[in-house]
Amino acid sequence: MSIWAVIVAAGKGERFGSYKPLVKIGDKYMLEYSVETISKNSKIEGIVVVCLSNYIQTVRELLKKYDLVKYVVPGGKLRQDSVRKGLLKVPESVEFILVHDAARPFVSADIIERSIDAAIQNGSCVVCVGVNDTVKRVEDGFIKETLDRDSIFLAQTPQIFRRKELLEAFENAASKRLIFTDESSLMEFYGIRPFVVLGDKSNIKVTYPNDLELVKNFINSNVDFKNLSERVYEDEKIRRMQNYFIGIGEDIHPFDKERPLYLGGVLIPFEKGLKGHSDADVLLHALIDALLGAAGLDDIGTLFPDTDPKYHGISSLTLLQKVSTLVYARGFKIQNIDMIVFAEKPKISPFKHEIISVISNALNIDKIKVNLKGKTSEGLGFLGREEGILAKAVVLLKKEEN
Image 1: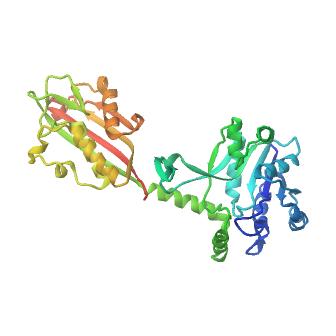
Image 2: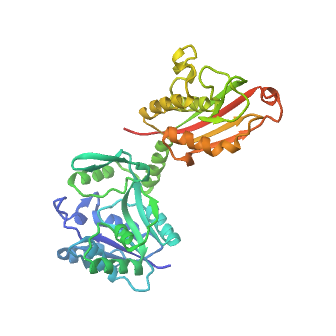
Image 3: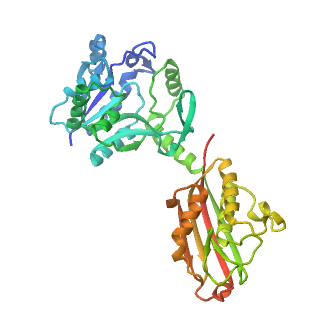
């Protein structure tokens, strides 16, 4: 499996104020960091560096100690022109091209290795990182909508594609006079869905002078760059895990022949209902307590006491919606709900999908996040004597930041 790298260092650095690749960071020039890291990967067979034409000789002299650097070529006016010029220097027999920005000097050996493995397995790879802040779409100066940040990622480099497909995509863009800001956008337009590998925030892109101060601080703080990406990845994983909260709810009600039976907000055709102050929906009461527990709030009996006449006969769906408002207001999102109804009769399975639909609609979540099971007690005890119904619920919440 033949792989070459194209390292792009052809930007004029107008936002930075000077030619970034030849800025000194610690004991090396910025360009050297990524060249050195990529050179050490055993799967890379050659490197093409694309730089500004007036720095060709300087860059060639700087990089002559790296045997894997086969060509140093002048770039074009646009990024895609520069990448294409580097790509044309790669032998036709090469299958994959790894494109990386010289302005990301601290790409780790781990990211390079994982990206290559993913590209070989999936045909392409783009390194991305998630976002921590709440994401808004703005039109005319006003917020139009809030996007689900769990599905939003920021593209970094390296980006790896098959050489033939990447070259064809460049030719297609040139013929239509289209401009793309990175290779993944180009390939998406060409009809290829790139595979994503999680990167890390140490793979910073130096764009403004303040960014350079940040990376110099990394150098001065004696950061171990060999293990930095692994530590950042693990820290991020732990931080995200700490944002998850589990709640457990349980409720039990005796049967009452004079009342209708409600389970999960659905009226169940049965000869007896459940005894209670509200509509006695034992399943929703268990779910409500699970939600309240995960969110760190008081239990259902404290919030809606059976001594308060305003809750007499109230629909438990109304209580569920009140609780969901409290939960969402505290910055939580519902990730998953799992519930069990224990009863000899009635059987839950005929009403399972309707109950799931009602609950998901009440909570404004996808039905795939709600699960329900029915169990019997095998004729044992209170339930086995058909004296009532027991329900349990487990909820997983994710704490949203900001």
